[in-house]
Amino acid sequence: MVSALGRQAMQCFLWAPRGDLPPGVSWALLPGDEKWLSRLADRGGIAALLRRRKLESGFAALGLLWRLRRLYREQRADVVHVNWLQNALSLHGTRVPALITVLGSDYALLGLPGMAAMLRRMLAQRRAILAPNAAWMVPTLKRLFGDVAEVRAMPFGVDAPWFELKRTAEEMPRIWLVVSRVTKAKIGPLFEWGEGMFGGSRQLHLFGPMQEDVEVPAWVHYHGPTYPVELRKKWFPRASGLISLSRHDEGRPQVMLEAMAAGLPVIASALPAHDDVVRNGETGYLVDMPEAFRTALERLSSAGPNTTLGESARRWVGEEIGTWDDCAARYAAAYRELLEEGA
Image (cartoon, rainbow, N blue to C red; front, top):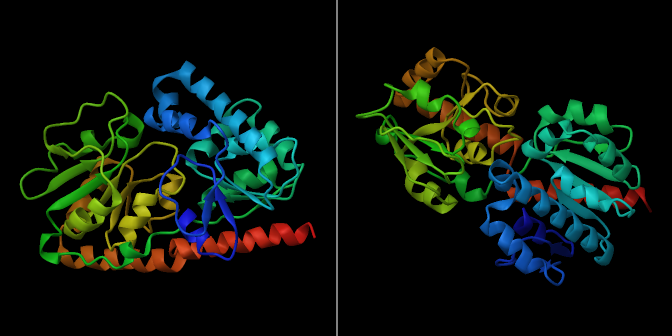
């Protein structure tokens, strides 16, 4: 996202853990921020702390909001782009226009007592666009905030190299991939439903950090954490498709979009976030019981249907989602609208 925004005609400043900056982007870190964010990243971030260390996560959340409050008052920006609703709470007391992206986890936090009321007070002080990255979140956001902010679904993009990936047809029936943080909610019923369905010529490979104490069955090839280049160059070209039986609060899973852009069909649990992406029987399958999961695996074991659904998935992502440059253009247009409204 930041790299693509840096290619737009604007001056862009980033507040995030320090790393390599893309062209067109400068740091917005204030004294002490770099060390604090580095320590937070080393602990897995606030979302991971919430699952494992409740008290510590509370102090981390307060520290984050304090640092963002300081940033919003010292950094003179024409428009602020905030990722996650709760990170926008620190805008209270300012009037800077804001575009606020909404993902799955922060959407779920709207159920916390007082959260919606605090966000409404903050939004009422400025021109704002709430930009969920999936359309299924729009009705609830409009009900809660439609009178104090515009709500507009704005999907994230996909890196262009995913669309260029070529699959090896003769190996497609052999390898299925799961790319996910390993928690009970993210894995869902996969190990239960998958028992007896994998082994021999049909393999299940799991990638992702172990973030809860989850026992991985012996028939699962668990690789631990991975990174996009490894998936794109080594695993996606050989895969039959991607599986996600998650029961977690999802927004619009990025790895699912990347797999579809690469021409992989997807088998996914029937969540609103998955239903927003997978066209059942056209780009993959939505399943809600073991029998449906088995049927989907059998249908996609044939190279013909597998290739047809995979190419349909690639076309859908290209037409409906696009690249990160397409996403950045959507954001840049929204920034201009926020500025023009206040002119």
